[in-house]
Image (tube, rainbow, N blue to C red; front, side, top):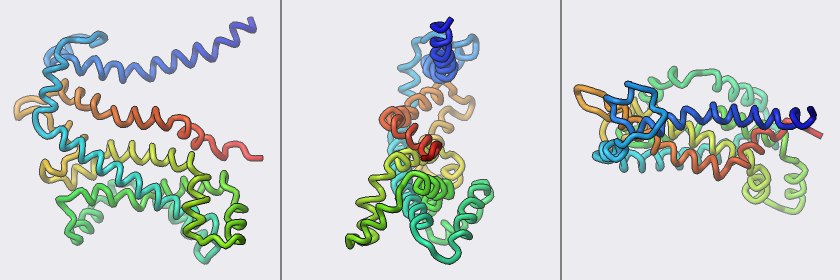
Length: 271
């Protein structure tokens, strides 16, 4: 009986993993079907139409859109993570007026849906003559309430401020302390935020939909939605494009899964 109890969690873990991975498996198998045949049966097996779907996906602007998404996501992730870390560190390590107000304001911004600010953001970008470029898709991630709140909570729970005080006593400047002492110590939190921001910016659809007005600035979600012609939507090609689009996300999560889990669980147990 004890052996059975020992194996029950592993069996449940395998079952839950298979259920979670099944949609991804279905996406891969559906990418090998023709659109007309995809809905005739449940595509549990692989078909022979993958090459044709790949030709459809790669026929026009896919590589350019792929590169645009990489540029937008990588730039937004780096800048958002750096700014969020600076905000989180400053709200934890320094005491100043309106500190509590700023902390509450950051939490309030997380409660406002992005859709409510799109119109105002569009007017702002038009005033700054940035429409028709990739800047609106990047700049929107710089002031990220979740990123600032995440880093603030992570630094407060997992980073000993005594290190900063010791560095100041030794004559270290604030910038040097932040980049050489603080950032290396909060690496799990940074990598967790990097994974999340990259995922959200890569999959972002609403903002590119509003600001993309030509093929030169098209990102992957907009390009995949455009696959097809005036008479039908090529669902098989769209699913093939989605399968290819998941490759950077899979590689990123595989490379950072250890630190991602460590960052999520940091601060859960104190003492």
